[in-house]
Every structure is written in structure tokens, then in C-alpha cells.
Amino acid sequence: MERVSRKGYRFNPDPDIDINEAVVTQDYANSGYDRGHMCPAGDSRWSGQAMTESFYMTNICPQHPNLNGGDWHELEKACRRWALEGTIYIVCGPILYKNPSYAPIGKEHKIRVPEAFFKVILAGVEEGRPRAIGFIYKNTAGNRSLDSYVNSIDQVERITGMDFFPALPDDIEQRIEKDCNVEEWR
Image (cartoon, rainbow, N blue to C red; front, side, top):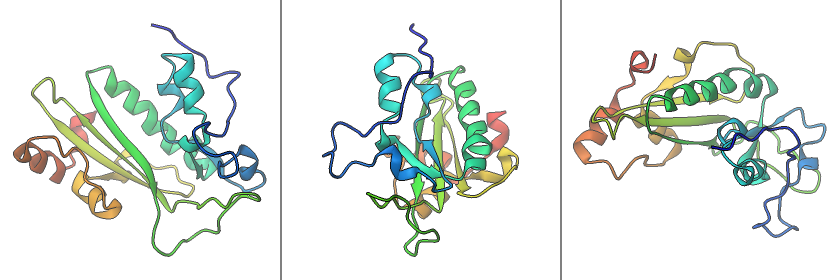
């Protein structure tokens, strides 16, 4: 398997978005926010194309620098460790409240700054031991343990309005989405 380095890749507009509408890296200039990957570059090392696409601005959200390089990064590394144990499914993204807490950034394109980010993980389905866990991170500085961000999938679904893992049999989905036992993930 190819192992691509992150070096040399640059943030670029998504070529599938009209150039007049596409967010550009300059929209983040002097904003105080990092260009935070939703699908981490570290998870895209399996091919040059995957790495290129991980740097498309459609995969990027304004993230507090301390969050991006700290606690969120720690969760990304934990997900990579969990993936070594078997197949996992990860869904993540921004959480945008009805009444924005932060002013938008960008000179040319106005970019909404998320109030928080979520990540939900499903593992063990193929092995017959399904388990799931959710996380919510406020878009602020912090240096807390993974445990302080844990939520059940049901809680994350309530906050985001999304239904994660609907293809699971209902009995399994209901059981694993209501609990959040971080000890199963250590």
C-alpha cells in the first residue's frame, strides 16, 4: 500500500465547485482560525489522489487553533488506532446553531464558523461485536481528556438532526446508539 506524505500538498478550492462560489485558502487569512480537516490528511495517506482531495476546501472548516492541533487531533489519532483493530465507520462535521456565536470569516466568501464539531464512530459490526460512540467538541481552546467530549450517538443525533447508521438492524442500532461506554474504546 502506498504511504503518501502530507508534505507539499496545498489547500485548494474543490474543482467540482464553481470558482466564483468556491472557498479559497485566502478566505482564512488573518481570521484567527485554522483550516481544520474534517477527513484528516493523516487518514488519506493511502494515495496521492486521496491526499489531494483531503486538502480541498470543501473538507475544511474554521477551527480554533488549539482545538485543531490539540484535542481534535488527539481524537483523530485515536480513530487511527481503533481502525487497526478492524473496520470502523466515521462520520464527522461541523455543528451550526440557529443563532451563530461567531462572526463569519473571509473577505471574498463569507464562511460560517461552527460553534462545535461532532464525530461518531461505529466499530465491531463485521466481528459481531458492534459498538458506537459519539463526541462533541466546542470550537474553543481546551486541553481535556477524551472522556470529557463523549456523548451517545443518540445525543449527537439530537443535536445535529442527523440519523447515523440507519442501515443497522433496528435492535442493534437502538442498543448501541443509546449508550456511550468509553471503556470499550480503550
